[in-house]
Length: 165
Image 1 (cartoon, rainbow, N blue to C red):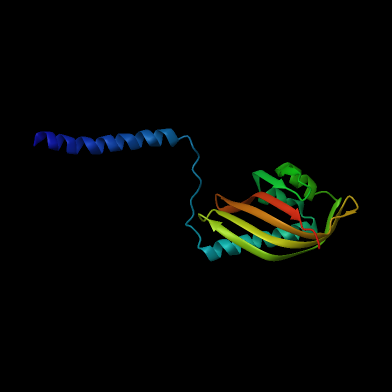
Image 2 (cartoon, rainbow, N blue to C red):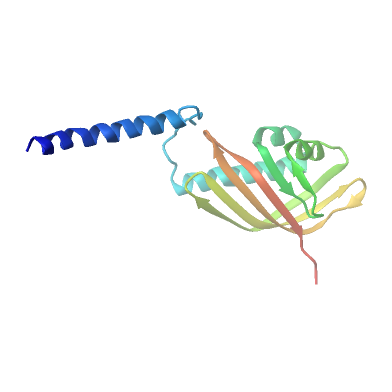
């Protein structure tokens, strides 16, 4: 009987000691501030607003948008197959050589993962130029948004120019 009582007391101590060891292994990691998870409609509305503001940033040449909304580890793939990091994207979208006259988005869709990752897809009909060359046409895009603390950041974007039949 005494052995049973000792085992009953020792097992919780072992569990507590194990949790303390686990905490010690992860204590150096920075904890992100937690906000109550938003419902799906709130998340989709936030992403819709971000996608709209990004389109406006393209059309109006707002380079500050990219500095604010791109993740520090951003990686994009443009229609020519070139990869761009955050600095590359800020430089390109702030360039006076890139001009978007109009961008009309259609077939937009969004999928939420774990409440902190959203993948958006869609088509955009673009009128614009880069270094005097016409870049107009229809494009398919994929955007990956990740919640960083309390706001979503664009971490990846891929664009493909669609061939017209």
